[in-house]
Length: 238
Image 1 (cartoon, rainbow, N blue to C red):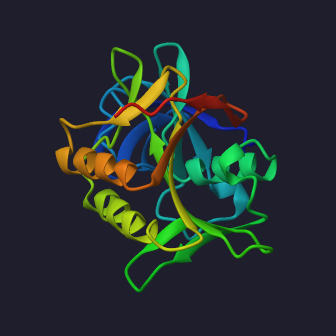
Image 2 (cartoon, one colour; image 1 turned 180 degrees about the horizontal axis):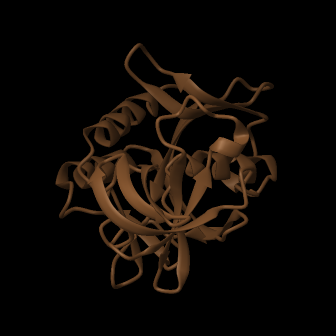
């Protein structure tokens, strides 16, 4: 996908204030910017790190509290996309291109579909001829360990474990499949696995889900200043 709001604006990261806010040096000024990921991102958003930001003002979004959002961080010679909302967009793109064999049977893909009053999943795929459906949750992965394994989650997430339990229950229904797609937005990763040290509950729940017919897949994206694109599938290590 091409960034619809390019060109991105270069900046230098200064300080993370809280999950969704940070100071960045941009265009000669110290600006309060939106951080587009609730993870810790300590290795990516270190003081002095190069970042690339979306400037919302040219698009007329004057209602925003922050003019800039951090989209990319430069890490070990590569651009990493920290924006969590990019992952579902990349999955939708490769579905439209027919590049995911497990989803080729589904001719409809709806986004942000509610399961109940408390949960919505990233996608519901449907086969209009057979009535088969697939519930899909997409996870953005940015953390890569020293062995090249992308780790999720980067911070404890009760919500992620809740989604897994609900997918596990849905997978028992007839004509229903459930998927978790990890989108590795750090090109340095060669596989994906749970970050047990950060969230052991998620790791345990993920393994249980895999044993009970929830399909786990991972895709690696190539990231740049002009675009991001899914490069290839990579293994999920449990």
